[in-house]
Length: 305
Image (cartoon, rainbow, N blue to C red; front, side):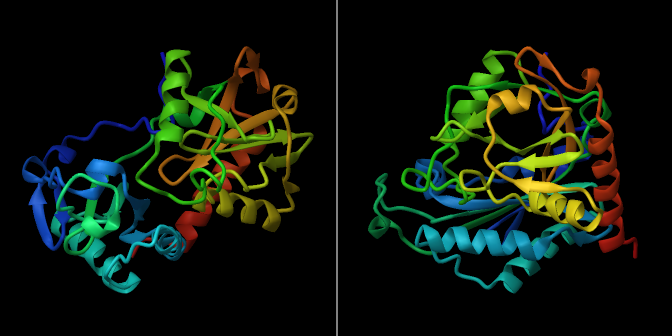
């Protein structure tokens, strides 16, 4: 039974969270956007997932830079500065009296339309900004027992079709791979790029370990993951050889270890890919070390106040 990279410990407090929508903070049961919203109609917008740890937003600068870069790439004016948007996030957190173990989904769509049509000229008013904070702690099974991946037929899109570096609301390419993996009974789908090289998973970035070297894709066809970048930096600062390079599925099958990274999950081990068992079906030593290094890094950067 697949568990997925976003499995979390259920928390009843999420039933009564307060959600930010365009200046209003509304109960979960009453939080709604219009059926004429660009995000609902077309997936037209951008988003970020951000963690709250010890009252602080983790890697906020990196997330905001990616959000605004994505909005700029699709010709959308968010309408407020990064500082103003951060204030809205903190306002939402304070309204919920949250402090830690929180994952926020920040969503910015192009806003309301006068009619269901893709052209921006039929938009009326400014963008729609939604902030959804939830209490989320990744399950121990995911962190310790590891994930099962399957290689999927859905290839990662290129910047000539749908730029994979933009965290857009239109996630069909990833959703298609996710559905394919789910039908095959796996936790995530491992996607190749148009040239046949390993690129990314449908909702996380992918790494392998070969003879103490850490490999990940070139980054050309995957989201420039914030946690991915943090792990590459941790490797460089802790004498772990890391390479962003092209590699194929045969390299994956022969790997000593594999793991995935993401904002919510951090670092999660992968113990099976297709029919191949990695690291004897257990979390590998390099993966375990990087999990610990990442946890220490977060606690050092964002200590309790």
